[in-house]
Image (cartoon, rainbow, N blue to C red; front, side, top):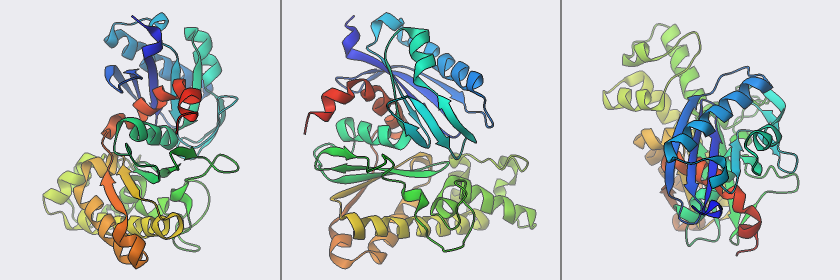
Length: 327
């Protein structure tokens, strides 16, 4: 078994840790595992849960660490790629957490770190909806909102390597407080976290909703699938809130279209995967608000790799130097 053909990718998200063994030449997954992400985590707990997910993925694939070329991790928030440190995860309430050194030491293979949306964009570029397109933006809507930028076939990270933070453009000056600490961010209006907060507020006001049984009112958590089911059942509260969130997302997409003028925008993440209405409204609103010519010409499509984009892209970090030299 050629070790240079396989790598482990880890999608370390706001609500879950998903790991997979990936054939990095074809993008095929041969073993996966999933764990829930805990809030208010300490370093030891994060390391243990990441290793546990990696172990399960290797076991399902029937592989040992010697069978893989390395491990890639996509983490939510700002990262130091060179040192392998998660600098700040606004939806995890953690900062300055070493990621790569503990994992590399444990398995005896190289480990690389990237931002979660950055690596999901990498997955879509090589094995998903970004194939054959040299200028596109991937936007992922889940616990938070982030995006990755491909410019002339290469990933654009920006001067401080934080380009693509579309979730933190100011949509409403002095508006709702975001998890990043600022006010009025797109993420505070259009993410699943924002949708859930609005639903919980409605329920606490006594509004009727079929979704009441699905919400953990104490934790304020809600799955995207439960939101989709409520809409399908004709739930007025949930439908109204999701409509407003999707319109806000459309305004954010219009900003991307007007500023960057990409050939394609790829929408992914749990909300897009589960809630068809959100995608349709966001696309319509983006084209309505964008400048006429770029708004008509831009392609707005769904991500093809679905929930596995982050895993596949993280595994591709092992090939980062090779891919960087390929236009």
